[in-house]
Length: 203
Length: 250
Ligand SMILES: [Fe+2]
Image (cartoon, rainbow over all chains, first blue to last red):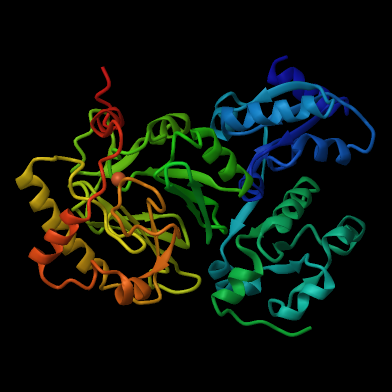
């Protein structure tokens, strides 16, 4: 199946497309329609199967090297899933073939500190995690609630998404960008913000 | 910082995956054929790391390196000391060079002795401190011991010159703070060390300063004599393994 043909099946809701790369790589740029499901060696295929909640659609995988692609395919097959499409040459090759991507901007903690007035900061950590302090002015919306609270947000504003380490915020950022928001992911999250001795507020 | 030692106890070899958890860039040091090139790629993927450099602390004579295979799979060149007499194209490193991984960096010191192309990597995590937190010493400084000087060139004069270089290199490493951690390329039964090579795979500069018998020798002649007196038999097939790792295989 060609990439174009496969993407058509994704658009029709017949297939699922997984980007196996790390969240920070995914959050910068990824194939259109792909979900982030970083590869690991602990029954990764089983975790995919569980996330599919009983459905068994054909699966496409996207990654930037053949070793991980082979291990992932093996793991999916072992879990009883079908691999319909695999691309293991990374994003540059994907774009060189004029295949569609979705993008999110990256923001370092130092850039955010300097331009804090230009962003609405959303902290997507769980309430108990906020005891370490939040970025001054940040709005706390736990990751799990965000989907239902999108109506509280404004597409004319620039959002900076932060979590503890930058992983959850990467998924949230790409989701919001798919929904048409202007969004940046804060790389390294609160551990780096606090580690760089930038100011925090106690909620 | 993500810091993952990857050990092969059968030969007493250590390799390392070191990366910046924020930006996701990583380097691999001394990858081992016994663990397989793929294990480094999969470990890195699992940690969310992209390997941007594969470094050898020296051309090994005791075990087969996976550096070239790993670098090939990643589409990059192996990084080696500019002094390495390798027969393949590599990225030459010089004293003071810094491999920048974002918030984590590796600064290179040439620490010849075990081989002329031996290097050490000073690892810093600037989210904690500018000061090196750990040093990957290769076969320059071991836990309880130092690397043997006779594997690159076993002729008498060459071994003596190498031992004197090793003395200087060990003294230079002792300029680091006591709190700096030491992660060498070998431990335990490895044939690259001598009689006092410990089975513990890591130590600190401070502990070795206090308790490593070679570090305490202040006279280069005495250092050389002791080093030669305590040699173990060379690793099996050393010359052949070294030339294969140099890319000289027929
Ligand atoms: Fe060695």
